[in-house]
Amino acid sequence: MTITLENDNDIIVHALEKIISYAKENQYIFLAQSIWWISSIIGLQQGILTYIDNVRKRSDIMIRGVSK
Image 1 (spheres, rainbow, N blue to C red):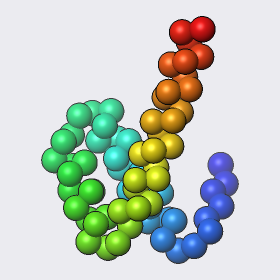
Image 2 (cartoon, rainbow, N blue to C red):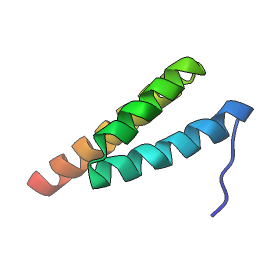
Image 3 (spheres, rainbow, N blue to C red):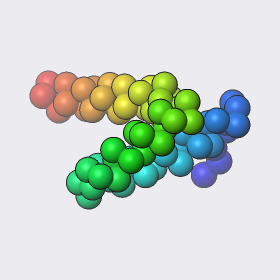
C-alpha cells in the first residue's frame, strides 16, 4: 500500500495515528495520553485533531448506513 504525503510532518502524524488506533483498540489510556502530550509538544496537535474528526465522521456514516 502506497502512502502519499504532502509534507514531512505527515509521516509523523501518520505514525502517531497508528499508535492512537492501537491504543484505542486495546484501551491503553496512558499510551493515548502520552501520544497527545508528544503531539502538543512538537506542534502536531492539529494533525491529530483532523485524524480524530475524520474517524468520527466515518463512524457516523457507518452508523447511519446500518440504521437505514
